Length: 169
Ligand SMILES: CC(C)(COP(=O)(O)OP(=O)(O)OC[C@H]1O[C@@H](n2cnc3c(N)ncnc32)[C@H](O)[C@@H]1OP(=O)(O)O)[C@@H](O)C(=O)NCCC(=O)NCCS
Image (cartoon, rainbow, N blue to C red; front, side):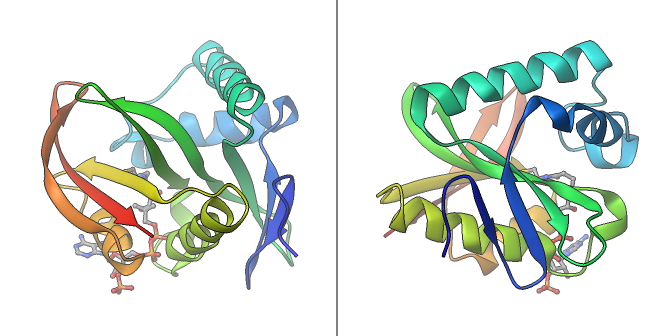
């Protein structure tokens, strides 16, 4: 049974983001390969702020990011979740995901995303979720398509062109 605190997928275990995840997020945020499509690496201080902002998001909205681990080895695989955002003046709920590079190409982002969408729809009652990615992030584009998102338009986000997708239940 999924709850908002913890849930699992076939291969992964998810726990709500907490400040104790700082070291693992630092590892991710200081990895050039992972952060190349996420605005570049972040300092320790920026990651603390990232966590604080995301904890505040949890407090304010009752949902946010989860940290995912391999069920067997307990290794940190990545972070993913749902976040309120504003796109071109419209309030939206976004699916976000990022994985440590050694776990890429094994279907994990799709596995996380599929479960998060179920949580969003079944536990949070969301009916409209968006996702966007840099136009050259073909792996993320493919993840969105595998999850059933439909292409809507190109947008400019953080001064860069992004592909904007939407999933309506
Ligand atoms: C994008 C990211 C989340 C993908 O994670 P992942 O676990 O490798 O994704 P999955 O394995 O579930 O699916 C990836 C799909 O993209 C495809 N793909 C990967 N690289 C590709 C490329 N260069 N061109 C086309 N398709 C590509 C894979 O073949 C796979 O599709 P398939 O199952 O049909 O074969 C991961 O690379 C990541 O964390 N990147 C850094 C952070 C990031 O960009 N996050 C998204 C921001 S919007």
